Image (cartoon, rainbow, N blue to C red; front, side, top):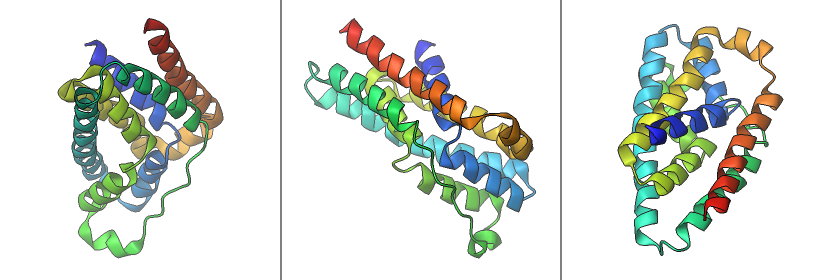
Length: 185
């Protein structure tokens, strides 16, 4: 349960103010089928994060175990500072409209997650916990927790939540996880 909860909280915080959250807002403005958007996010995230968690698990199992905890914990600190850098908005072009809300969301979310902070966080969590299933489930839940409210009430939420403060909190969580891990070594 610790793996699931840590993965969920970590990715929820990392996702706030992220480009994929802004992508959710843009897609919600363009498409009226909110359920199709959510299922598109869910499908893209499960596939992307399962591969990412597997990669992290594989890396931790195939590199010297002596150095892996050090690399993972330092990486958490680096990602924490990276979270302080705001993302640029994703653009949604009209050329994909004829594919429908689900397919457009699936493709754009999958592509937007490649190399994203939450994907890197998922790789790190996979390496730390070596549990592809629970990390994938937790990080996917985190993505949904951060993005579903944006789909339904995005404009209102973005006006009330100071993203700069949320970024600082999210960054602090990552840095503290990394420091805690280094101290535990």
